[in-house]
Length: 252
Image (cartoon, rainbow, N blue to C red; front, top):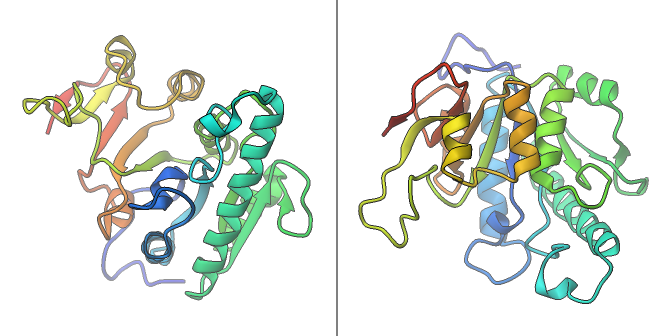
């Protein structure tokens, strides 16, 4: 266990990190970019060594999405199950990269795939975290019609996470699309109600409602900048924080 008296000090004891499959592609059109995977694994290991109990939910959009063009003509349930398998592929790849850096890791799957992952059992997941292992949750919720954003919100609440970190390829949430509007402003923090009213698309509606109703804070940030995961966990003002409605909406 790292000496917490030296160096950065975490602001949270237990966190849930959501990584989109698309973010693992980097600049590629498909699959996992080895350089991006290495960057993510480095940051996860550095953060976990601060003494943070770190769980990860990984998406599968870099390989297959149930609502993508490649799923056209498929039954939605079947397509979503294929998408769940894609998240398992990403989870096992991430586990391999993390363990090469000396950090014990467990993959827990919401669908039964014993050769690759443990079944998801809430109490077992929490025990792994208490023992200092990084836990990667794969296969979403195990149910079609639910996104990995919803899986991240659900798992965050099940394991008693202090915060949900949504790692993306952009540096936060803006009041308008910064790629189209030069005057777009990034929020430092935004209330749940304001994010809903302005349709800021922080995450899908089901996931967002789960977080709002259970007062689970969300931080949206750019994971491609080295060290950002650790900075967010240490409470630095990185990205955009989604806050309870009695707090103020502010711009960076």
